[in-house]
Image 1 (cartoon, rainbow, N blue to C red):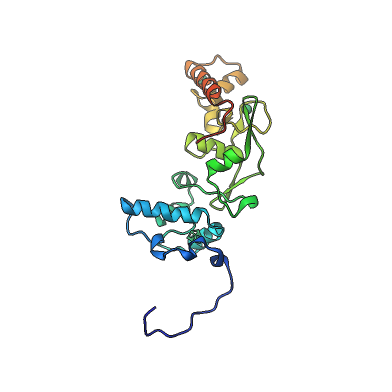
Image 2: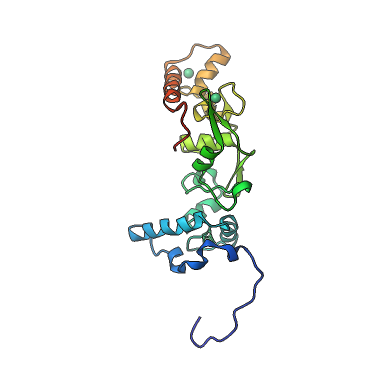
Length: 225
Ligand code: SF4
Ligand SMILES: [Zn+2]
Ligand SMILES: [Zn+2]
Protein backbone atom coordinates (compact mmCIF):
# COMPACT_ATOMS: atom_id res chain seq x y z
CA UNK A 1 0.00 0.00 0.00
CA UNK A 2 1.25 3.50 -0.82
CA UNK A 3 0.58 6.84 0.87
CA UNK A 4 -1.72 7.88 -1.97
CA UNK A 5 -3.80 4.71 -1.82
CA UNK A 6 -7.04 5.68 -0.12
CA UNK A 7 -9.22 2.76 -1.23
CA UNK A 8 -10.96 1.05 1.71
CA UNK A 9 -9.62 -2.30 2.87
CA UNK A 10 -11.58 -5.14 1.27
CA UNK A 11 -14.10 -6.75 3.61
CA UNK A 12 -13.77 -10.50 4.02
CA UNK A 13 -15.57 -13.15 5.98
CA UNK A 14 -14.00 -14.25 9.24
CA UNK A 15 -11.71 -17.25 8.77
CA UNK A 16 -8.63 -18.93 10.20
CA UNK A 17 -6.58 -15.77 9.71
CA UNK A 18 -8.46 -14.09 12.53
CA UNK A 19 -6.93 -16.51 15.03
CA UNK A 20 -3.47 -16.59 13.48
CA UNK A 21 -0.70 -16.42 16.05
CA UNK A 22 1.34 -14.34 13.60
CA UNK A 23 -1.13 -11.49 13.31
CA UNK A 24 0.74 -9.51 15.97
CA UNK A 25 4.18 -10.41 14.63
CA UNK A 26 6.10 -8.44 12.02
CA UNK A 27 5.39 -10.08 8.67
CA UNK A 28 9.10 -9.91 7.69
CA UNK A 29 9.73 -12.57 10.33
CA UNK A 30 7.95 -15.06 8.06
CA UNK A 31 9.85 -14.08 4.93
CA UNK A 32 13.52 -14.83 5.58
CA UNK A 33 15.89 -13.89 2.79
CA UNK A 34 18.00 -17.04 3.11
CA UNK A 35 18.32 -20.29 4.98
CA UNK A 36 21.64 -20.05 6.80
CA UNK A 37 23.19 -17.97 9.60
CA UNK A 38 20.82 -15.32 11.00
CA UNK A 39 18.14 -16.48 8.54
CA UNK A 40 18.21 -19.97 10.07
CA UNK A 41 17.59 -18.40 13.49
CA UNK A 42 14.79 -16.32 12.03
CA UNK A 43 13.19 -19.41 10.47
CA UNK A 44 13.20 -21.16 13.84
CA UNK A 45 11.62 -18.10 15.48
CA UNK A 46 8.88 -18.01 12.86
CA UNK A 47 8.26 -21.74 13.22
CA UNK A 48 7.98 -21.32 16.99
CA UNK A 49 5.11 -18.89 16.40
CA UNK A 50 3.44 -21.35 14.01
CA UNK A 51 3.80 -24.15 16.54
CA UNK A 52 1.49 -22.35 18.97
CA UNK A 53 -0.90 -21.17 16.25
CA UNK A 54 -4.44 -22.62 16.37
CA UNK A 55 -4.73 -22.12 12.61
CA UNK A 56 -1.68 -24.13 11.65
CA UNK A 57 -3.58 -26.82 9.75
CA UNK A 58 -5.77 -24.36 7.83
CA UNK A 59 -2.77 -22.17 7.08
CA UNK A 60 -0.72 -25.03 5.70
CA UNK A 61 -3.63 -26.28 3.61
CA UNK A 62 -4.11 -22.78 2.24
CA UNK A 63 -0.43 -22.40 1.35
CA UNK A 64 -0.31 -25.83 -0.30
CA UNK A 65 -3.56 -25.28 -2.21
CA UNK A 66 -2.51 -21.85 -3.42
CA UNK A 67 1.03 -22.95 -4.17
CA UNK A 68 2.43 -19.95 -2.30
CA UNK A 69 6.03 -19.81 -3.48
CA UNK A 70 7.74 -18.02 -0.59
CA UNK A 71 7.60 -17.44 3.15
CA UNK A 72 6.78 -19.61 6.12
CA UNK A 73 3.19 -20.84 6.28
CA UNK A 74 1.74 -23.51 8.49
CA UNK A 75 5.11 -24.04 10.12
CA UNK A 76 6.89 -24.92 6.89
CA UNK A 77 9.31 -23.06 4.67
CA UNK A 78 8.75 -22.94 0.92
CA UNK A 79 11.27 -25.73 0.38
CA UNK A 80 9.54 -27.90 2.94
CA UNK A 81 6.16 -27.22 1.35
CA UNK A 82 7.55 -28.15 -2.03
CA UNK A 83 8.60 -31.50 -0.61
CA UNK A 84 5.14 -32.06 0.86
CA UNK A 85 3.57 -31.15 -2.48
CA UNK A 86 5.68 -33.68 -4.29
CA UNK A 87 3.63 -36.10 -2.17
CA UNK A 88 6.39 -38.56 -1.60
CA UNK A 89 6.08 -39.97 1.93
CA UNK A 90 9.84 -40.34 2.26
CA UNK A 91 10.20 -36.61 1.66
CA UNK A 92 7.97 -35.89 4.59
CA UNK A 93 10.61 -37.47 6.79
CA UNK A 94 12.94 -34.55 6.32
CA UNK A 95 10.55 -31.89 7.48
CA UNK A 96 9.77 -30.75 10.96
CA UNK A 97 6.74 -32.78 11.86
CA UNK A 98 3.57 -31.38 13.35
CA UNK A 99 0.45 -33.25 14.22
CA UNK A 100 -2.88 -31.77 15.14
CA UNK A 101 -5.11 -34.35 16.79
CA UNK A 102 -8.80 -33.54 17.01
CA UNK A 103 -8.43 -33.37 20.77
CA UNK A 104 -5.77 -30.71 20.79
CA UNK A 105 -5.97 -28.79 17.55
CA UNK A 106 -4.90 -25.66 19.37
CA UNK A 107 -1.64 -27.24 20.41
CA UNK A 108 -0.06 -29.06 17.53
CA UNK A 109 2.55 -31.49 18.68
CA UNK A 110 5.52 -32.94 16.95
CA UNK A 111 5.21 -36.61 16.06
CA UNK A 112 7.62 -37.44 18.88
CA UNK A 113 5.57 -35.45 21.36
CA UNK A 114 2.38 -37.20 20.31
CA UNK A 115 4.07 -40.57 20.72
CA UNK A 116 5.22 -39.60 24.24
CA UNK A 117 1.82 -38.15 25.17
CA UNK A 118 -0.29 -41.07 23.98
CA UNK A 119 1.70 -44.08 25.12
CA UNK A 120 2.16 -45.89 28.42
CA UNK A 121 4.99 -48.26 29.23
CA UNK A 122 3.76 -51.55 30.65
CA UNK A 123 5.91 -54.61 31.37
CA UNK A 124 8.51 -53.93 28.73
CA UNK A 125 5.93 -52.95 26.10
CA UNK A 126 4.67 -49.54 25.06
CA UNK A 127 0.90 -49.30 24.73
CA UNK A 128 -0.81 -46.77 22.49
CA UNK A 129 -3.60 -45.01 24.39
CA UNK A 130 -4.47 -42.36 21.80
CA UNK A 131 -6.95 -42.35 18.93
CA UNK A 132 -6.89 -44.51 15.84
CA UNK A 133 -4.53 -42.38 13.87
CA UNK A 134 -2.13 -39.46 13.93
CA UNK A 135 -2.75 -36.59 11.54
CA UNK A 136 0.40 -35.31 9.93
CA UNK A 137 0.41 -32.99 6.92
CA UNK A 138 -3.15 -33.96 6.01
CA UNK A 139 -2.38 -37.67 6.06
CA UNK A 140 -3.46 -40.01 8.84
CA UNK A 141 -0.82 -42.48 9.92
CA UNK A 142 -1.25 -45.43 12.24
CA UNK A 143 0.53 -45.27 15.61
CA UNK A 144 2.67 -48.17 14.37
CA UNK A 145 3.79 -46.19 11.35
CA UNK A 146 4.65 -43.17 13.49
CA UNK A 147 6.59 -45.22 16.03
CA UNK A 148 8.48 -46.95 13.23
CA UNK A 149 9.29 -43.64 11.55
CA UNK A 150 10.53 -41.97 14.75
CA UNK A 151 12.87 -44.88 15.45
CA UNK A 152 14.16 -45.70 11.95
CA UNK A 153 14.06 -42.20 10.47
CA UNK A 154 12.24 -43.42 7.36
CA UNK A 155 8.60 -44.22 6.73
CA UNK A 156 7.85 -47.94 6.64
CA UNK A 157 7.15 -49.94 3.53
CA UNK A 158 3.91 -51.89 3.57
CA UNK A 159 2.11 -52.75 6.74
CA UNK A 160 3.82 -52.30 10.12
CA UNK A 161 3.14 -55.33 12.28
CA UNK A 162 3.92 -56.21 15.87
CA UNK A 163 6.56 -58.82 16.52
CA UNK A 164 5.48 -59.18 20.18
CA UNK A 165 2.21 -60.65 21.38
CA UNK A 166 0.95 -57.64 23.36
CA UNK A 167 -2.06 -56.06 21.68
CA UNK A 168 -1.66 -52.34 21.12
CA UNK A 169 2.10 -52.38 21.66
CA UNK A 170 3.87 -49.74 19.59
CA UNK A 171 7.38 -50.15 21.02
CA UNK A 172 9.56 -49.55 17.99
CA UNK A 173 11.74 -52.61 18.50
CA UNK A 174 8.56 -54.69 18.57
CA UNK A 175 7.52 -53.48 15.14
CA UNK A 176 8.58 -54.49 11.67
CA UNK A 177 7.51 -53.24 8.28
CA UNK A 178 7.21 -55.42 5.23
CA UNK A 179 10.82 -54.99 4.26
CA UNK A 180 12.13 -55.86 7.71
CA UNK A 181 9.85 -58.86 8.01
CA UNK A 182 11.59 -60.42 5.08
CA UNK A 183 15.13 -59.15 5.57
CA UNK A 184 17.84 -60.92 7.56
CA UNK A 185 19.71 -58.93 10.20
CA UNK A 186 16.54 -57.51 11.77
CA UNK A 187 14.27 -58.59 14.62
CA UNK A 188 11.67 -59.17 11.91
CA UNK A 189 14.09 -61.47 10.13
CA UNK A 190 14.72 -63.31 13.41
CA UNK A 191 10.96 -63.78 13.89
CA UNK A 192 10.70 -65.03 10.34
CA UNK A 193 13.27 -67.75 11.09
CA UNK A 194 11.19 -68.76 14.11
CA UNK A 195 7.95 -68.79 12.14
CA UNK A 196 9.40 -70.81 9.32
CA UNK A 197 11.42 -73.00 11.73
CA UNK A 198 14.63 -72.27 9.84
CA UNK A 199 17.97 -71.88 11.64
CA UNK A 200 18.51 -68.21 12.51
CA UNK A 201 21.52 -66.63 10.84
CA UNK A 202 24.17 -64.68 12.82
CA UNK A 203 22.86 -61.34 11.55
CA UNK A 204 19.37 -62.11 12.80
CA UNK A 205 20.64 -63.43 16.15
CA UNK A 206 22.68 -60.24 16.58
CA UNK A 207 19.69 -58.07 15.72
CA UNK A 208 17.61 -59.92 18.27
CA UNK A 209 20.28 -59.46 20.96
CA UNK A 210 20.63 -55.77 20.10
CA UNK A 211 16.88 -55.30 20.36
CA UNK A 212 16.84 -57.05 23.74
CA UNK A 213 19.63 -54.83 25.03
CA UNK A 214 17.93 -51.76 23.73
CA UNK A 215 14.70 -52.78 25.36
CA UNK A 216 16.49 -53.20 28.67
CA UNK A 217 17.94 -49.72 28.35
CA UNK A 218 14.70 -48.05 27.31
CA UNK A 219 12.33 -50.49 28.97
CA UNK A 220 10.57 -48.26 31.45
CA UNK A 221 11.17 -44.80 30.07
CA UNK A 222 9.04 -42.96 27.58
CA UNK A 223 10.42 -42.32 24.12
CA UNK A 224 12.76 -39.37 24.25
CA UNK A 225 13.36 -39.12 20.51
S1 SF4 B 1 0.65 -21.29 11.02
FE1 SF4 B 1 2.22 -19.73 11.20
S2 SF4 B 1 2.07 -18.50 9.35
FE2 SF4 B 1 0.20 -19.71 9.48
S3 SF4 B 1 -1.26 -18.39 10.51
FE3 SF4 B 1 -0.28 -19.60 12.08
S4 SF4 B 1 1.46 -18.41 12.80
FE4 SF4 B 1 0.77 -17.52 10.85
ZN1 LIG C 1 5.57 -55.23 22.66
ZN1 LIG D 1 18.39 -64.38 9.06
